[in-house]
Length: 287
Image (cartoon, rainbow, N blue to C red; front, side, top):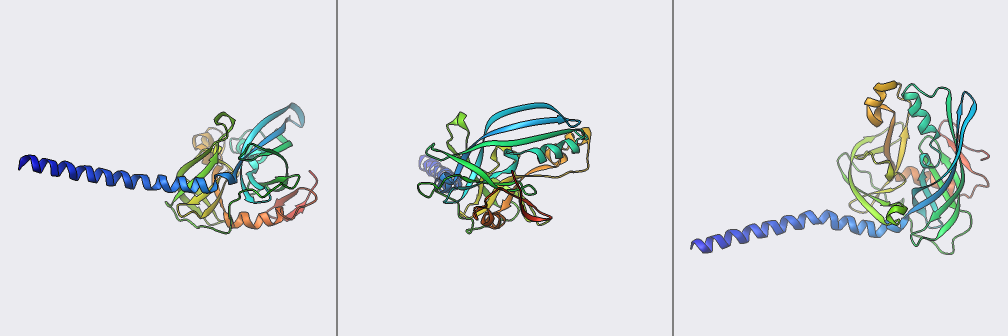
């Protein structure tokens, strides 16, 4: 009887452990399915950027660098949304300097010299910026020539409106050091900010995830990760002690509805790059 009882108990524990493992695997299985469905809609963008530093109006440094950023394909024609801060961080740098009480006589300028989309099969396609929204950190890039065939894109119309603490999954594409493989990360919504324009704050600080699409676990798109920067009114060491928030910067998720609306203008094939000023509306300007 004792032996039989022990075997029953051991069997019950094994069943409970198996059930627990199965439940633990469910989010991972769902997450992998989402990644497989959308990974080809996340691409790398190769950039050549000229950087100038001016001190008291005089050029103090002039360098050219090659870098990569991540973008989300939002139209099969090859229209890609990236974080504007990844190609022109002048606003971000300026805000941080002012919030730290520095840089009043220092100005950074960034000029994008070349851009190439790196498609999932490693094909490189010449591209250009067609629309910038400096207030909301959006830069839309599209191929300079029509693609031979449509490519994978996220469906911005299949939208989700998550609430605080809802689970999300972020689809990324790693850099050259990791052979541009696809990657995924779970997170949660830590805040919903209704104004001046609706956006979400995810539970992460990794700016390497900028330009990546965010989905709910039922495969609906929340939006794309971008950088929000404002002048916080702080200064010096106090700003640094406050972390990213103290310096007036935060990774956000801009809703798909906002991106969809802005993409309509980017898809209109402007003859010259357009810059959007939130207070003035869209006004075309020369590069």
